[in-house]
Image 1 (tube, rainbow, N blue to C red):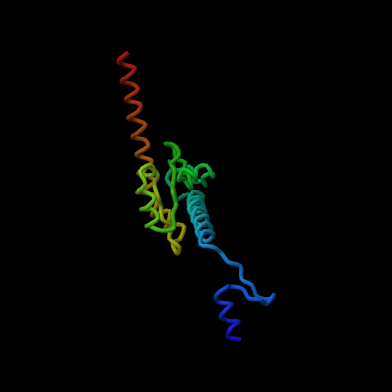
Image 2 (tube, rainbow, N blue to C red):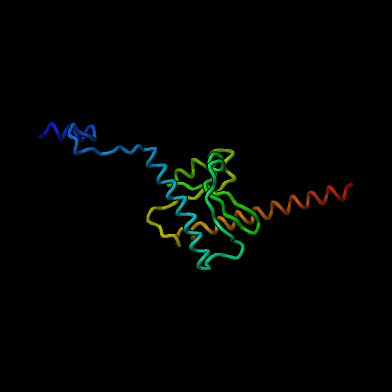
Length: 154
């Protein structure tokens, strides 16, 4: 019996036909955790919007496409100033690594916490989304002023 246990713990399956445990790779675990966190983000903002707990400038949050994901965008927050791309990670360290990449700095990154309620997650992330919205408004105003200066110089 002891050799049977030893083989079971090492191989995760034995020669018996009645006991097998499918292996789940680390990559599959990461992927499922990531997808769950993206869903948590979108569901949290959807629930807050339906409950009327979000500002009027907030329209919706939606999951990004596969093409968006390739560019580091997991979700979009749609506001009156335009869409804001969002990266969602499972840890603060993951966010720091993501933001360290030069071309990804303009995408805000949020770490989802396992035991955090949806309402707490929204309250924690909404101020950063509001800052991004204000940055978007300022950028558009600067571009408009620049365009108006060009037109007035002609």
